[in-house]
Image 1 (cartoon, rainbow, N blue to C red):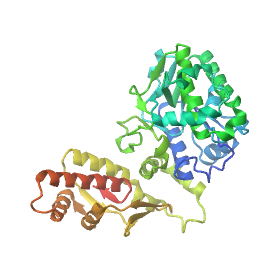
Image 2 (image 1 turned 90 degrees about the horizontal axis):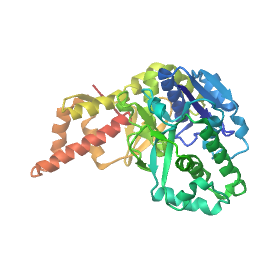
Image 3 (image 1 turned 90 degrees about the vertical axis):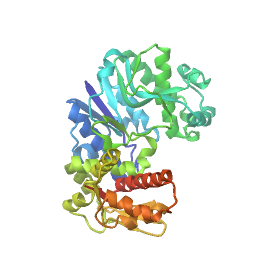
Image 4 (image 1 turned 120 degrees about the vertical axis):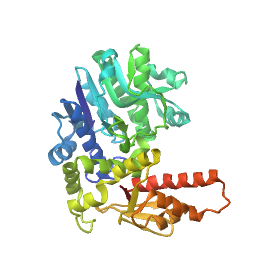
Length: 411
């Protein structure tokens, strides 16, 4: 199966722009991990990109794509917020069956099986809630033209879209029709683009249009995830501690700004592909950091945190004892906890009332039973057993979060 990816820089500097991620580092970590995981399962992975993407992803990071096509500078007259056009342009270059994988999708198994008996493969169906409806209502008055295939959506007859974290197609005639309709949709509204929130517009000319046109053309759509998901209800798509048993992750939307999710991804790359992690660090290094950390320091402080979260969840589920100890990369302030990573990145998390108890107890190497014994000293003697159990449960949920942040290690 031919796998393709597409990256268009939009004339931005990849070393500085975050591309909607928490930072430029996480953006490049995502592309790195996505490519490397694909290469674990597929021998033919092509990247469509522009000159900036070729310079960073291929020349600097040396990601192991089997083929690179540098043709997306042709999109540079479009606003960079229309990021989905890069995917459509890549699709339009295909004359054989393929699957396109977004750069924020990570796999731990092959994903092409369902495409064998269908015309189209998508990640899942999305059901439009008020979230999508409100975006459409804000965009619709500024459109001079909409394709006839999405008129049912416009009339609220068919309120579904296709999530295209993955997109495969076996019907090239349909593919060409779809790509043509997308560019027609955008180009015919060119004069009004300044009045439209373009980031949201991508959803409609990419995801809604695909589903609507497939229905109109009577095409068979395979879903990698069978369950339909609400347009803002994606849960569990950043659970790196669940892989490889969990074979598919997609850091969609808000996950890109979520510190814990980004940190899990970072630690996974650091643990499994350290040579690429250091390439990214070297590429992005600036004078903003006090000094460049040694590789051994990075491993000692951070590489084990993802395994720690796995161990913590497993031991709690099995009701087993374990050892937990703090890492000296944080400081507890009055209203927040400040975490400083060895690459100079600093993150603050809000301090909760239960943190006072947690940090007072877990200030040394200590086992689970001792923690729970110490924690009960802060509970009134006449408290019901149900409330005691609830209190301990809440405490461990908070500890899971702190472990994910990299504050504690489990052994």
